[in-house]
Length: 279
Image 1 (cartoon, rainbow, N blue to C red):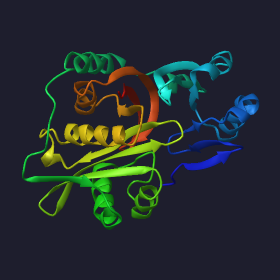
Image 2 (cartoon, helix red, strand yellow):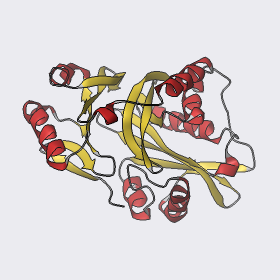
Image 3 (spheres, rainbow, N blue to C red):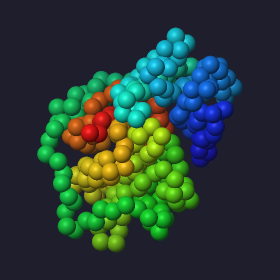
Image 4 (cartoon, rainbow, N blue to C red):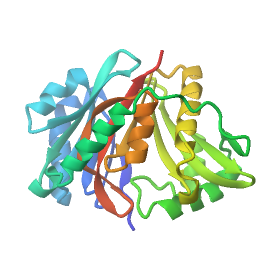
């Protein structure tokens, strides 16, 4: 498996490759705005990718929308709690643009929203230990990720990747049953923009249904508030009842669906965006 590469495009940050069959504009630098559309098109066309996915400030979105992009999701207060973000897409394939399971995805969203504002998790059972991961944990963490995900958009199954990102801007959290890590999640922090993506949830099948993901999420939120993060969000698998319900129950707002966006567990799937503006 060849993972998509993350690289600088002038002053901006992109990811692209055949694994997700797309170009992903992860972070747009305003200095690159004028030439960005042409650059993204060039990379997509040169490599035969079927989608461009772009996260851009709301006030920069019109230029993209006038050039063949469509809005798939939006998060208010994404940048420093003040400026919104648009999740935009441009397709080079009708198959990529059409989600055959849209009826089921809409059903999952509606069920998740109805289950919002339920009782909070509080603390995990006394038999479990929830704590922030340390470098000594990365081998066991990678083993869990490799067991749960056949493919993933970032190399979380590589201990070196986990260690390197742990030292930069990603906080990982684990739940142990005795000595064994049974659940993991992460908060990927953008310190400049004061937001964090709540992501990389993995739980052994035999430990599902015990509200461990919700407990991890609530713990991460408290940690993010203490770090002066203004907005938290997730990009969750659209066909996963469990993860969508978990975020809705924790009072995240639905922001939109990214169609056929991410290669996860062996196939390209649509993803739902949920967000919460922290007080």
